[in-house]
Length: 283
Image 1 (spheres, rainbow, N blue to C red):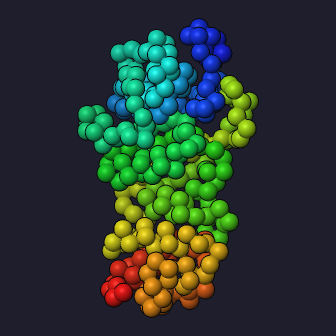
Image 2: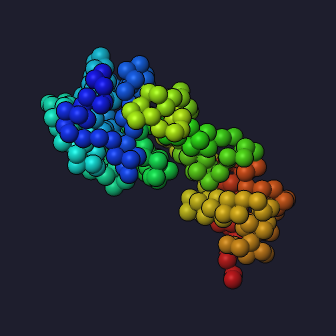
Image 3: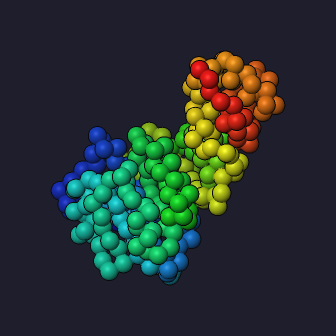
């Protein structure tokens, strides 16, 4: 693994703080991330934010290597580096914004679900996780190995009752199994970030953890419940659904209404959503 500083110097570049660029340089960590993909010679791996190509190289060095690696990068300078350093018959460099990437179209071209891997930009990490899971629901993603800030990883995998259990936790748990594989210390990067990162494995479920009559109602109930998470459920839900309808739905779901959102399991949210879906809105 060549030092990122040497690669940057060779191309007359420096890490851009405004882009939040921190380049992973620890060979052991790169190897663990690549191995965690469990990619085979038949797989297509989509790498988000390929940067200087360190993880791209680690993926290409797997034995056997993936059938194809699609290295996505939106920074034009990094695209130039990738084309010079790692592009080849099995590595396609794609100038693209991961937030707008069409995983479904890529999977159709591949003829099989994708494996997604990469360091998710902090500003859009939540949106990317949800986009990956949506693609998984469509059968386009088999699994994802992503790096996020440790705080986000803990939030995604939090159990009910935890102070960090929230809307994102429920949304992910409903559609994927999430597991923290290991942490990555700041010293593994150049330049070193101010936070510890975690490697998170997301495995989309074949079906929802708690099937509901109307997924849109489920999403809205979860949104309303956590919008004012300090409030009891009966008060938090009344603002979006009305007092009478909320009281009826809570009763039908077997909930007192004095609970707070972080106390409910995914299954309880599903029962509550089904109760709301069965009660007409007469407001």
